Length: 500
Image (cartoon, rainbow, N blue to C red; front, side):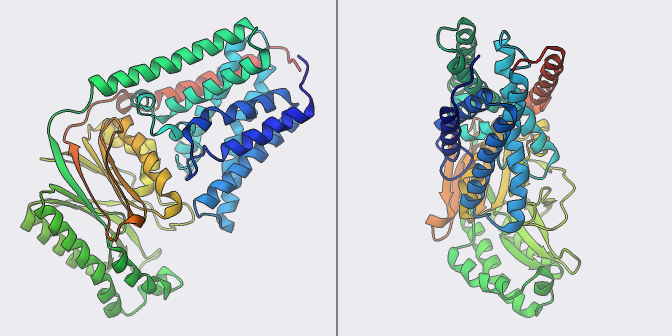
C-alpha cells in the first residue's frame, strides 16, 4: 500500500489535534467529536512511518493535556510535569495500534480494527487502577455521559465498555477510509462495528424504557455554605502560608471565624429537614473545626439530627496538631443522634491535597432511606473503590465534593458512571462546583451550580431502591478481557512477518 503524500498526512494530524480539544472531559466538550478526532489521528499514524507517527500523536496528546490543564485551572509547574505522564498515556493506544497495524497483516482487518479499542481500554484501566489519576482525564467513554442509551452498557462493562465502542468505531472508520469503500473486508468490519454500537444503544434504550426506576422515593437535600459566608472566611486561609501556620494561630480567632460557616450549615440543615428531607448532605470540607473542638461540632450536628429526625452526612475539615495538620472527613449522624460512620477521604488529589489517605474502605449503612454509602469528591473517579458500594447492594451513593469552576462539569459527569455501573442512585453535593443527583440509569434528577446561586441548595426525590448490576458482581472483567486480548494480538503480531 503506497503511503499518502506528507502534506495530507500532517493535515490529518493537525485536524485531529484541533478536534481533540473539544472532546477531552473539559468545558469545551462536544460529545460527537469523540467519535471523529481519533479517526484522523489513526489515519495519520497508520499512514506514517513509526517514528514520525509516534512523535506526531505524542505532540497531539501533549497539546490536548496542556489545554485540558488550562481549562481546568491547573496549569501550574508541578502539574505541568504530571501532564507529560498523562500525555504518554493518551498517546499509548495510538502507538500500540501503529506498531501492530502492519505486523498483523493487511489480510486481517478484524484483528487490525480491534487493536486500538483494546489498547484504549487497557490504558484507561491501568491508569485508573494503579496511578493517582483515576478517571479524571483521558477516558474516552466519559465524553458520552449524556448519551443515556449508550452508557447503559456501563452497568455490565464499566465505563470502559463505552470507551471500547467509541474507539472501535473510530478504528473501523479509519480502516475503511484507508482501504476505500470498495474493499469488502473493510466494509464488513465497519458494518459489524456500526451494528454492535446500534445494538448496544437500542438495548440501552430498552433498559431506560422497560426497567426505569419505580417505587418509593426519598427526599434528599444538599446544603452548601453561602457565598457571602465563604468570602468572609477566605481571608483567614490567606493569612497563613501553610496548614502548620494556620494550626498554630490563635484558636479563639479561628473558632469565631469557623463558627460563621458552621452555624449557617446547621441552620440550613434544620431548614431542609423541616421541609421534609430525610437525608441532608453537606459538601466535602463544608465545616471547619480544630481537632480539640471536633466533638463540640459533632454534638451540634447530633442535636439537629435528633430534633428534626433526619440523617445528616456532614463534610468537615479537621485541623490537627500533627502533620499534615488536616483530616478530610465525612460524618453520618442518624436521627437518634448516633454516629453511623466516620470516613476519611481515600483518594486525595495528587499535589493539591498533601495529606494521608483514609483506609480505602467505603462505609455502608442500612437506613429507612435505603442502603446508603459515602464517597468524597475525587474518590468517585476511581471505579474500583466505588464498586465496593455496588458489591454490597447500595441503593444511594452520597458524594460530598468541593471543586472549582474549571473542573465542575467534568467531575459531575464522571460521577454519573459510578451510578450506572453500580445500580445505585447518586446524590452529589458540591461546593464551588456543580451538584448533581441522578437515578441508577443516569437520569438527572436535580442539579445546581454554586456559581449561579447565592447559597447553593439542591433537593431531589431519589429512588429508595437500587438494582443489582453485572458490573457490581464481576467488576472489571471486561477490562481484564481487553488486556488479555491485546496481549494475545501482540504475541500474534510477533509470530507474523513484518510488513512495511
